[in-house]
Amino acid sequence: MSPEQLIGTIEQVDAHDTDSREDPWLRASDQWASLTATLKAQYQELVGENGPNQETVGEALRTLGHAAQSMTESLGRSLRDPETRARMKEAAASFLAAVARTFDDLGEELRSTEDEKQEPEEA
Image 1 (cartoon, rainbow, N blue to C red):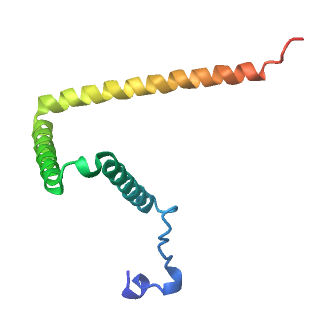
Image 2: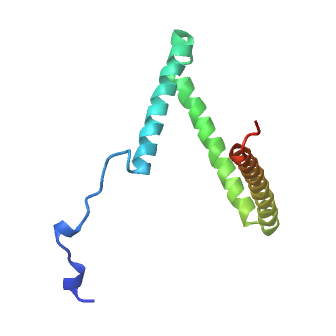
Image 3: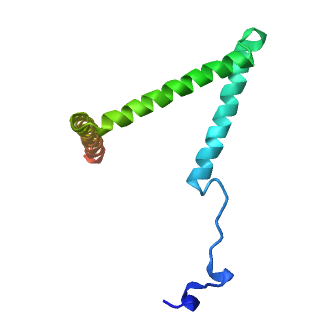
């Protein structure tokens, strides 16, 4: 392929739409930001002046962060163990089978409801 084939004109390039309604990542980011602001406002309203100070909250968040990091490292080590991976696969397969069964049952219920609606009513 020649360099000329790799070069396009600006007219040939679609501009990235930054409308968050069209970009699921922007929409998710907007929703998380909105949720964070709402939770913060509700927390501040709840605790008011009697709540813990910023330093106490920061320390609690650092503790949670360390716990999450330790849990992630432990999970990573566990996933490298063949026996644990096999057990996890079995558990995941069982979970997926249960979800599939639930959707099958729901689908059957919806089909039977639809069939009942389509049957002519007797006078």
